[in-house]
Length: 316
Image (cartoon, rainbow, N blue to C red):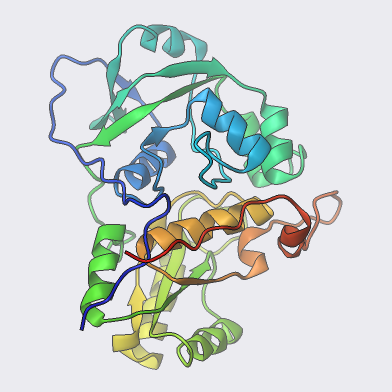
């Protein structure tokens, strides 16, 4: 049986894995979260992005919900540095990125620019309230952003947290091998509960396969731990689901709590993994607080705002 897979976002799955060649390049330290973003760029999770955003793309994403080339994209993927580092990077061209002292990637510095944190917070999160976890994180970022194409030559070692991690090329190969024509993606940052299980099993009555893809990464205080989420889903899938109908993989990135923008962002990522459909649970994409102007049901307002929705491209 041949299976035509849905095209990745932008029409091509990005692959930025490169051979190590960095002996004469200067290296700069970045956080583990930024390394995750770099790996998601390199493996195609963030297709069509080929690097951290330059200023033109960032401005377009904030104002239009699209990259400068017109492709829908709603979340800034940016690399922040302090002024001293920005000055050092300015004329270097290619640099090496490292995290925890381990070199992992090469970046071509194309753009170094300042940015307005209030503007990003208002556009992406709908609030400048520092009680919002992502706004709080944004306001602690360094004062300059660096944009440019990158390549990754060393991925993080797979440990207990990453043991189920798969890249889009791998999930697409598995979907094709299983002959699935329709695949529904399920995003969560929580352990499964009965309502989730019922929804997932109902989806299996409609679609060929179910792609369960919990988010592993930094979340807000009070959320479930990564280990608990993985253990709970492993038990559920192994004991209560038809194994030939379910594909389980973790996705390693920040939870951004960005309402409708994050809902679209998650749909794009699952499309890159090979999903034809995506289950949106509003609590997965929204952070609500008791005393805030942030709208609790913002995901239900997608049709009332000019947010790009043409995400379903023809199959290859």
